[in-house]
Length: 74
Image (cartoon, rainbow, N blue to C red; front, side, top):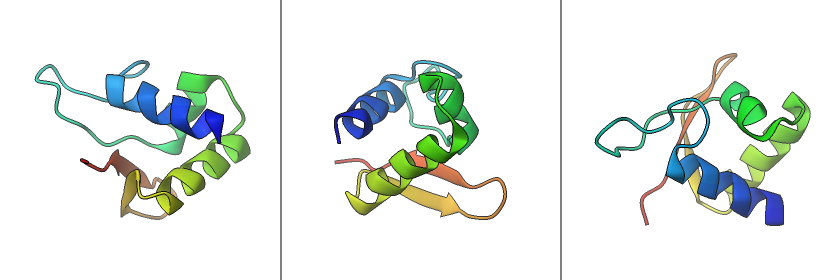
């Protein structure tokens, strides 16, 4: 649970590969972005993403091999 909160905070702050643009608007991110950001395995990143989706903190924009997600505004 703690990891999912840290992941969301990192995504929201735009750390790592430009997950936010210059105006601070939320952009799309992929599982690969989470892997690079947190230095974890793809399967662990997937588990974290699934938990964040269940919690309603991120949403799937479109699925498939290159699924894209975004942080839900609260």
